[in-house]
Length: 159
Image (cartoon, rainbow, N blue to C red; front, top):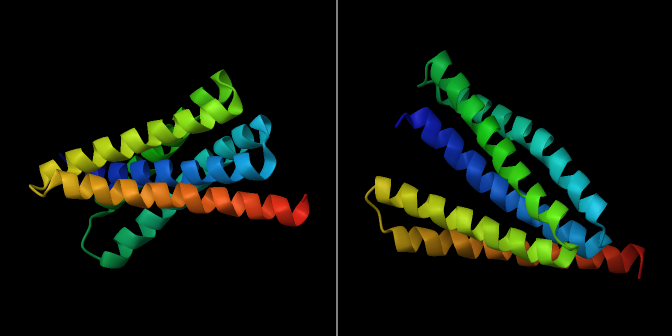
């Protein structure tokens, strides 16, 4: 598998899951509004996918070790994976009651992180269980922190 695909897909997938779950948790607690969560996901999908693709692009250029083609491939794979992963979270939010959708999104995101972490560690001949545990813990921490931040914002401005 091409390194540009692994790099772009890996960054886009993990960033897509973690930022989207953080956004969902924070907006849900802060607004308790399905439309706010939906709008947040759509805006995040486009703006953050472009931002991450640009970040990978500049990072790869700074290394001065990659061809123009490799740089653009990594950028494109980052954009496409981040966009597509983020948009998958629209499904539970549109189909389920908000609190159920938030829980379903968390499970979906944790499964994506676990699957990708396991696959990546195995392909690098590293301990997949350690990688999965580490990445799951980070994802759960993000969910907890952003949920709490959403609660704080609600208390400060609405409470």
